[in-house]
Image (cartoon, rainbow, N blue to C red):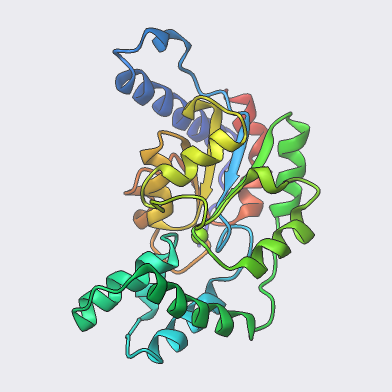
Amino acid sequence: MSITPTFSIIMSNIKQAVETYNDKWRTVSSDLTEQSEVRFDPRVVLFDMDGVLYNSMPNQEVAWQESMAQFGIAMTRSDVYATEGARGIDTIRRFVKQQQGRDISLKEAQQMYDVKTQVYHSMPDAPIFDGVLPIMQKIRESGMQVGIVTGSGQRQLFKRIFEDFGEFVDEEHIVTAYSVKRGKPYPDPYLMGLEKAGIRHPWEGIVVENAPLGVRAGVAAHIFTVAINSGPLDDSALLDEGANLLYPTMTDFCNNWEQLIDSI
Ligand code: MG
């Protein structure tokens, strides 16, 4: 049996999440002179791609397992979800080291990743999640920017981003595996996402993530992080990484957008 949360419960949860975030920031920045200015004031929303914009994780599962099997690397379904968000080449180097005891070059890892990309693109296009385009519309109407921050290095997918979301994002607002040296779970990709949007402070952004490593990256960047649990993980896998809010679907987040803005 499920109970539909009432408006007041949702509102108090969101308000509490914003207050908790602000309190944490005041602690983190207690030595800074700008302490008094620190307050959640979003100007950009940075979306992860796989599992957030596109329902692509089922295809990613197949692509990772089939491609790595060609190189004698075993990857379970939970491996795919546990490593999601990291740059593909980093995941490959780690698995080769663990399973074959070899240190491989970035070039070799990229060649293996290219095979994964080929398998991925042999499958039908993953659909856009419901709620994504409506929330981007609302974000823009709220006067904020939209950015995309992905650990993916699949160039064909970047083309698709412009086809699907070109109304809301341009090339200046996209961070990929090629934009940073250190991928998620390091904060670097999300910090670069802020920088590309011309945003100076972490409290002026929102991160939207579905993966534990991605949530960790958003939290490490000190950005207010919303988890969308679109996959098979327990909510705790995302909440334990420090997500400020969690929704089961993008549509739920979209429906709560006004309440979040009203809580600021
Ligand atoms: Mg993801």
